[in-house]
Image (cartoon, rainbow, N blue to C red; front, side, top):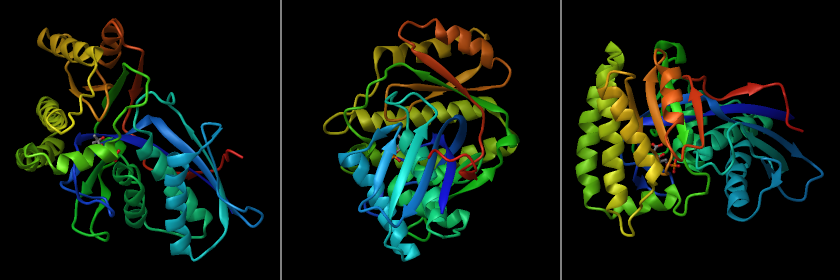
Length: 327
Ligand code: PMV
């Protein structure tokens, strides 16, 4: 059977950095994220009798080496659960510019998990899909449920998965993804997580994460935007403190990254638009704001020298099946 799934990427407000278990991708801490509607992956999978090996096409190009290997490994996990031996044809397409330094593994592996498991005849629950996606890419487990999602770190394969805290309609937030550089990052997040494990500053960060998690749960109950912003920025800066003090140091920021941060702070302090920044393992900045002011924020940030593109996202639905196949 040919099956197609669509999955959003997600931006973490409380981030995951460092793993308790490398193979099972059990994170050091719980994390909380928002699924993004304009940055998504669509993936079609079909297991076929006439194939001699898996065929993987990503953004209209044949995948090879490590990129293909990661997809094949995930297909192997699914074949094992479904007890099938057939090879698959996989085609995958990202909505956002390729190699823009945006997190495609979260949406990519969430879409692959849903499409391939269904194509293999499995009917997995949301929890099991999230657990399975986690094995391919940690943050992918947060792209299975909808809206504002919580990944409970857990302590084993069974207990580590993400679920929806609130649906997309709960809070009309915006994420402006500010693309400042289009090259692929030199150090992968997989390597970054390993380096964090050896960093003495991780302990201090994990303490802060614990208290930020408590605060953010209350923030969501009360929809307190200013406090949400404070938590998001403190979180991102503590994450980058660990990255900067790793050996070797992970310096993901570019001059434009800092220029965007300063501009957002300036606009906020002058009472023009209230927005708060967060940054993943790369140079691009995510500015979180409310519906009111989003268009103005985009216009102002567009003027910062070095900004290439801005994508405005709303909270999104998680991974789901669609009828339009890619082949
Ligand atoms: O899932 P990975 O290995 O791509 O790691 C994601 C790490 C961050 O994006 C930096 C943080 C997060 O929680 O998304």
